[in-house]
Image (cartoon, rainbow, N blue to C red; front, side, top):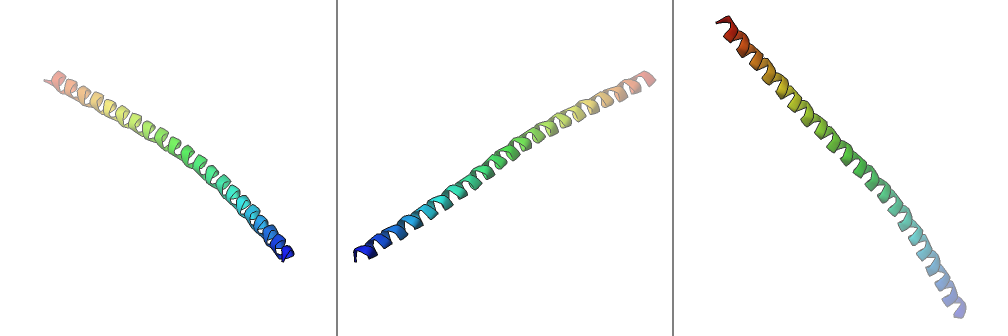
Length: 77
């Protein structure tokens, strides 16, 4: 009976160790995934900032073109 209890204790410890290793491994994968997600989020924010800058530049250029057209029309009169 004592042998059975020791064997059961050994098996339980072995299963706990295996479970702990599995959890630690999955945590490392989750941490790596979070890091990649954080990097992707940062890149997305940078891309959005570049897009907004490009839109602003395009608007500014279009305003300059429109103003030049107006001045040309005024000069023709």
